[in-house]
Length: 442
Image (cartoon, rainbow, N blue to C red):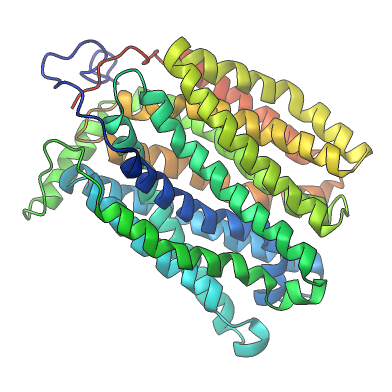
């Protein structure tokens, strides 16, 4: 395990080039918009899991229908590591731009599969099969999206703003959740329960489809930030072996970053589960429940940008650490209050504690993946760390807590899950090096 060659950029790098010329804000917007659209589609499934379960996974009880639906939500995570390897390695060889164009094309296929597939009642077993395939394609796209887009944002950032630029990775996820929540609240306010069941839940996916061409158009105008892209020269297989060997020199850093991703992803997916939790466990009205989505999105969007900004000024580690400690200490009391006094106010409070504070901590840490890895494996490493952590824990979070609540009868199960994994994340943060003042290898 190497500790002296974690990356050549831990100090001023003799071979590192000067920071690039400022990238126009519309180019950063293209990265953020594409990323937001991809996460919009992914999290919309989570928010409308109850309705999707009824449409595609009929079962003897509503609980089994919901459990099947969240299980298929988890299916989308299993292709993330594959997307991370294939698209991440491609981004480190051919460039960030072609990789990000590929991921937005894949998410189009996955979203269309969810939005346009007829219900089980109409086409039988073909319906859930198509939905599963669509989720697999979405997972492949997201597995390959995070590494290249984060690498691009860090490489494109002007001096002293790498944290703020990389924070848009988390902030865009918050923006996606906010958009999905607003659409969901509006739909539940104007549509009847029967209309939501029959077709209303499809509307958010259809809206996402209409915006994807805009993201593709914007990404086509992006510059390339990888200075020494190999391109499609037929050396892909050899380059991949070399990349994996180089990545193997950073095992300690990868392990610590995985610990951080574990806590972050569990908090995020517990927060996105709050709408389903409010409907199925707390028995709150649909409109009030969907407001949790708005709270999660808005708090993540705002606090992520605050976290990135503070990380540039005071260091990555303290801004990662203190919000995570707050999540660990406040989540159980927030859920205890919520279960004893279920209301819109307590639901929003619990959602902001779990999701918003995670947004601040996670955003402060986003540039670290790129800062601690050399450019030859920056996108691949970031994609793999994110994809593996999210697959093992994010993909199972909603299934696990749904099952545990049913088996134990304890509605506080999600809180204990967040608290336990926050301990692992705090250990990872403490052991990581500080990267705020580090020269970025190019």
